[in-house]
Every structure is written in structure tokens, then in C-alpha cells.
Image (cartoon, rainbow, N blue to C red; front, side, top):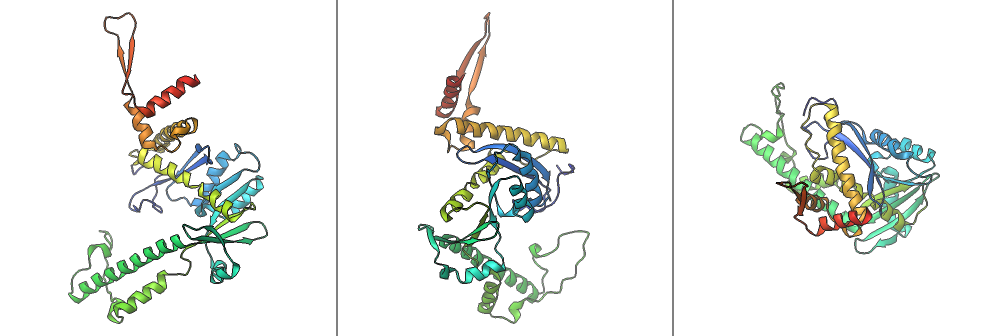
Length: 339
């Protein structure tokens, strides 16, 4: 719906900036437990760093002193890391690369980087700071993916410039995708592309200089805890289970789209979805054989279970269970064994 105050226009991870959205935060006990313990719901334009504080505070008193909090670089700020340390906890997070990192990247090989993963070509170095440690990595696989992405962007920009230039040459209206489409806005376009003064090769070089930064393949982690390069990387990768929970909530539990009109309706719909995800996670935790089974298959198996109640001409009801399959049989057997 469009009327709930929580719905705001903000940075859309679903690439739909034209839609109002909300933001949700989830806290999960890390591998091997992987059970969600917290949910926060905020407006769609709330900054990740501010939202993280609310999500962390919701669950922090449930954590033991010295617990390691893992979160991504979008929520990384001095205030947030200080908040965690003030609670006598440790943290590991991603760090956005900056100009001081560029100086180290330029001399990366001189630091004799340690090989972490030969298959992905990951190497790294440790940089000690007064109150934390940075772990700077280079990945050949990541570099290739990022350079391929930059190349596609260069091609796309060249194609767009050509389409605009063709419209100018033929004195046609600009293609719709390049125009402001708002009935309340009048615009007079006066456009000249750089293709008039550059060859295509020069245009490609210009775009490459803009898009290729030299940071391709590099990423950095930051932690208050002294870890090896391998430990830091493996620990941070545990955060991927949160991404799986978000995917499960949105696409398998199907909490979206929220076709509701009040904040209370939003809270209600999301709490029901969260509880469904909690039950699924508890099933995976309690039954090791289902640890890596997707939400979709567990949900389908449970939905297929059928109970027929036969009470025709009987003094007592007869319950007939059917549509058994391996997954729901395993869940039912485990439940019976426990109870």
C-alpha cells in the first residue's frame, strides 16, 4: 500500500526506486545455529548505520560478553563499532576502501601477501591499527567479475550516447528512457554528446578511465579481534546466512509485496513471516539432515500434509493422515521422538 507512514522512497535494493518501501533488520545466531532472534522494522529511507544501532540494541542483552558481532560495511561506522566495544563485545565488519587504502594497494605486492585461497586467487595482508585490525585482500576472481561489469557499463554508455546522438542528428525527440517523464515538469533539452569530438576508441578510453579505479579485486575487513587472514575471511563469510534469510523471507515465505495500508498491518504481516522463518530455521537446527534444504522444499512438504477427519455415523472422530513424503515424514518422526 501507499498510505502507511513507514513506506518511504529510498535506496532500492530491488532496483525499484519508483516504489515506496520499508527497511527490515534481522539478527541471527551464527553458524552452526543459524536461528533468527530479532526483527526490526523501520521507514524505507532510514540509513543503514542508524538502523543497525536499533537492530543491535534489540538483541545485545541476549548475547554473552565477548560475543563476536558480524555485520556488513553498509552499517560500519565509528559510532557503531564503539557501541559494540562499550558492551565488551567484539566485531568484524566490511570496510569501504579509501585513499589511504589506495596507497597500500599501489604497493600491495611489496607486502608479500599471503595466499588464502588458490582456487579464487585470494591473497591478503594484515594492517594493525591502534584499536582494530584491517585485513586487506585481493581476489583474482573478484577482479575479473568487476572488470567484466565495468566493461559492460562502458558498452552500455557508448550505446546510450549513440542513441542520443542519432536523435540529435535526425532532429527527433529524445528516446523516452532519457527524458524526464513527469507531467508537472517542462524541460527544454539542449544536448551535445562528446561523440561529436571523440572517436569511439577515445570514448572507450575516457569511460575506462572513469570506471576503472585500480581497486578492482580488492576488499577489506576490519575487526576488533586478532585473527589470522583465513579466520577473518571465513568468519565474515558467515554473514552470508543472513542474506539467505532475507531471500527466504522475500521470495519463499513471501512477505512482499505488502499490500496493506497501516503501520500495524505492516508489523503484523512481517511478524507472521518472521515466525514462519523462525520455525523453518528451528527445523533445520533440530534435524541435521535438513540443514541445507531450502525453505521452499520444507514449506511445500509441510503444506502437502493432509488430515482427513472422519466423523460420519461415528461416536468418535477418526483422523486419517496422508500425503507423506521424506521431508515431512522426517519432521513428524522427529517431533514424535522428542515429545
